[in-house]
Amino acid sequence: MNKTIQDLREQRGALSRQLNDRMESGKPWTPEDQAFYDAGMAQLDDIDAQVARRERLYEKVAAEALEDRVAEASARAAHDAGNVSAGRAVYQKWLRGGDSVMDAADVAVIKNVMSTTTNSEGGFTVATEVAASILDALKAFGGMRSVAEVIQTASGNPINFPTSDGTSEEGELIGENGTATDLDPTFDIRTLGARKYSSKTVAVPFELLQDAVIDVEAFVRNRLVTRLGRITNKHFTTGTGTGQPRGIVTAATSGKVGATGQTLTVTYDDLVDLQHSVDPAYRDQGQARFMMNDASLRNIRKIKDTTGRPIFVPGYEVADRGGSPDMLLGSPVTVNQDVAVMAANARSILFGDFSFYKIRDVMDVTLFRFTDSAYARKGQVGFLAWMRSDGNFVDVGGAVKFYQNSAT
Image 1 (cartoon, rainbow, N blue to C red):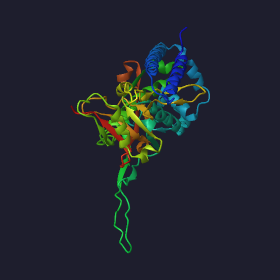
Image 2 (cartoon, rainbow, N blue to C red):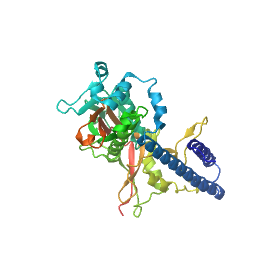
Image 3 (spheres, helix red, strand yellow):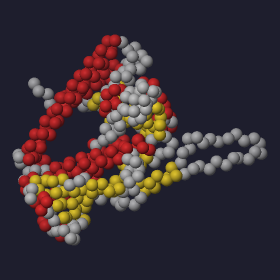
């Protein structure tokens, strides 16, 4: 019998729990334990591959159904016809018909910023709940939004975060009638602005807009979110800080550099050193974690500690039994594909408390609808989203450190 994706995920959760329990048992690690671990990890990889294949198949079927106007989307349409807020209802109406179908009541719900010079260009500042939905969906891309602190504001005025590094400051012992020494703290400012991001234009066939059962909102939203999510996560990870956000890799300081010859590798000792390069004041807050590319995680899964026990513990999620994330040396792991893969001089692994990285979104997502001849000739309508966002690392005490591969 073919297993569903849910069946496979439950199977994966149960197996991961078995591996987790065995590794956390505290008993000496034996060759039998290692054989069980290796077989279990291979089975987990196989299950993950099966899930990925099914998801790709379902996405393909859904896309074909959408293009063929097959009513696979009718269930979503029925949901949309139910408890829909005024803002979402107007948004859906505008997606299909543009400014020409909007009445005075509709305009009162949204801010219309239609071009005064080009009739085919109409702008729609989406309702608050729609903007929140778009911004929330961005969490699925890359990893930074899932671990950083995300701030949403109504306007784009700069936000300043005062910083001061007191990790090396200490008091003094003074003798009787002695005079205290001056030691003034040093303060700095980290600023969050509102940089302008574009989704690039999304072309939608007339047929999709005219078909009542197609969930046009989801179709357009998913395309916009995917594009905006990818570019912003890249900048929040590796942005230079000049003309773009300052990414966490750029802002973090060195915690460990690999020895000569480690251009493509990292050792158990390196990872321990990286962990302890971050001050315990940050580690003890319970939010410290590793972040790396999936290719780096693949290599780390093969590393064992001094007793021969693998240092990677697979996460699990089982209904009614709680769950646990993937763990490495006792700390959670976040996969971020915008972190560099291991290579000469690459900053390939991060560790620390990523909540000190602040992401700021302005709740003013603007969507434009194009019906000019460039699209009309192809039987399409164009959509373009603008959003404002910025990111910066506001800590100066070393909350996040990086591992850097050797140059040679």
